[in-house]
Image (cartoon, rainbow, N blue to C red):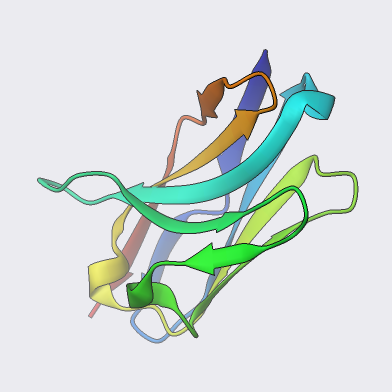
Length: 116
């Protein structure tokens, strides 16, 4: 079992920055890739960014050049640095991980609100 806890969400003005954190606990050694997803009201959950166990990163087109995903060396904490935030970035942001045993885990989510 893996537990994921997000933090760092909040209210920010357009153009501002936030840094989200995702702390993993439990079977840390089983974690393969990790990622950030978001879900805005009335919309489907979408992938924002992901990072593989080797450190390879991918981003949604809508956040490329503005968001940066990273992971600490112990692979216990993942981050999402969000710069130049836009009102359309407003959503609940979820941390996700998959394991070498083909299991998938989610955090509880953290709200990000960007005012215009």
